[in-house]
Image (tube, rainbow, N blue to C red; front, side):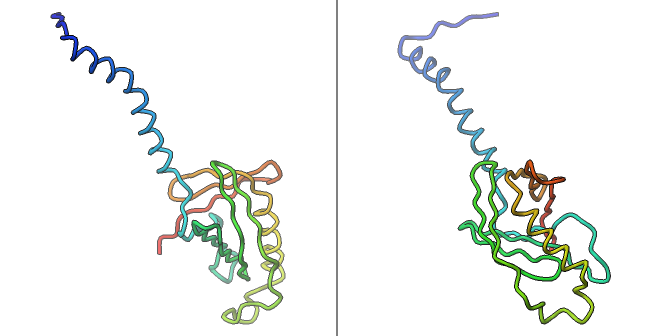
Length: 154
């Protein structure tokens, strides 16, 4: 193996490059983290089977300013979402009394209305989020099981 001696000026440049390389790599690591940012302004569907006879499943859309819309099993509520690193806090408005006008009779059964209440309670208990595929997983110590939301394909 052949060894080369560096001239004094080039030795300084080589030393700088060797010392700066970990810092540069750390900077690129930050971009990898940026790729796993919360998917703002995207419809994310709760990854559960629909409650028949309606195909609707809960959908959450969060804008970068923290405003959110949550379409539940029957109703839609506004929400405020705070995200910091992997922490999340969701505050929802109360459920509206009136059912949506576009739902026909019988679509908002007692079971679906109860599921709306359960969903709001679960969202309030979410304290952490994690990017997973094209969506996110919400979890927390008081949640019985994590809630997976996947990106909408339409």
